[in-house]
Length: 240
Image (cartoon, rainbow, N blue to C red; front, side, top):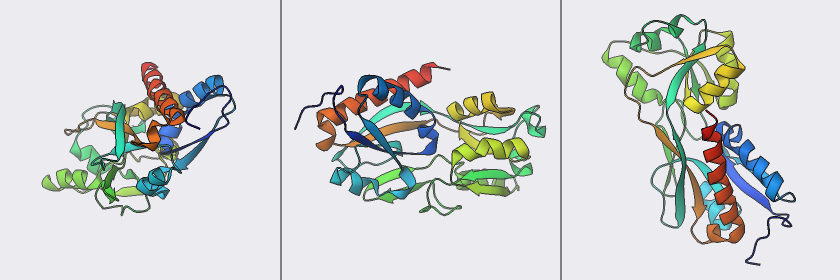
């Protein structure tokens, strides 16, 4: 029916997102669900492996969370939070103290985070999927290569990974550096002996948004989920 009672519903919420968000905002959401909708469950599906527009159209997906550009009008995009990216490295890394410029970006190998098999490592930072533009939280290699190239510098890639959660352990063991969201860096620094630096170039913040279907997303169950996600993102951000 067209009603939703969180206390009794045994709905499984289908959410598509990245492992960065699954490890940050989603735990807050799960705590809320366990408290207010104890019979409900969550199916977390990887953003990189789905055709988001098709799945939202079919109702097989309730919301998708990520960095989206152009969005077809049959979907609603709601901002959840914004973040900026920083360079993460081990605390005793040669680049962790002193000046941090393009020279440092050229001197140390990078960990590239490729959150989609549909993206070539050297390709653009967005893909177009059925009129929906999706961006990936990566170091935007082309942009950085352009900056370095203008100075006669090049970069080396030490590793390409598909999961951001693997990155801190790789950095802790090597001289590699990686470009990651600040919220992620702050938690990684607490967990491991790491440090972060602001990028030595202009890097605008990025917006993490929640995407839902304009008609199906208005269903009371999905409306409840969307509100719970907004509150979870706010709570998560207040922690720092």
